[in-house]
Length: 205
Image (cartoon, rainbow, N blue to C red; front, side):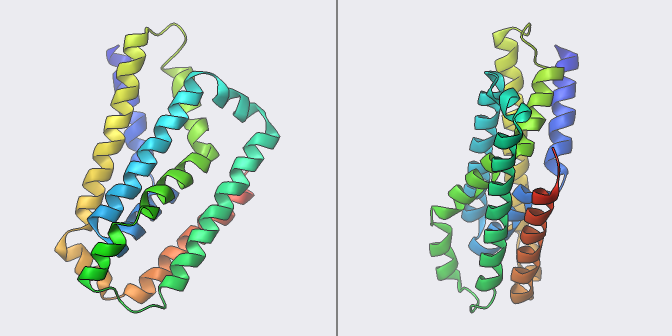
């Protein structure tokens, strides 16, 4: 049990601190729409993780990983979505800076949650990660109570990471730094999202 917990903690932390599409989207939304936007995006990502965990637990994730067609559909859909978000980010960079009141209004938009959820759920790498976890740590022989505890631990680590990440981005020092180059920031995030989308589309399983 202790060995399983240590492996789960280590692997989950490693995955969370590794830059990827989820981190880029949370960073962009938090800097554009404020803390609420970042937290809503993060909540969407956490829900997406729960979906990945659920279908991997019942075996559907294994079927997806074995099906070239299913994997390719998810891969290209995720790539197209990332490229779309990148283009939207570049287009938004041409607009005037948001004033504080406008930023609050934007942060209340439900699109932030949807962006986090859709981006996470479409990424086939998520299913492969959780399949690896279930294959190495959580097996059919693992008691249901232990499985529930390990899954809760993964979700808790993910949620705590995003809370800390968004809180850091929302500090006055960080926000002031990025606001100085808001227009360039839109191009940077747009380029990163487009690059991640193209990279995902070009990768094999």
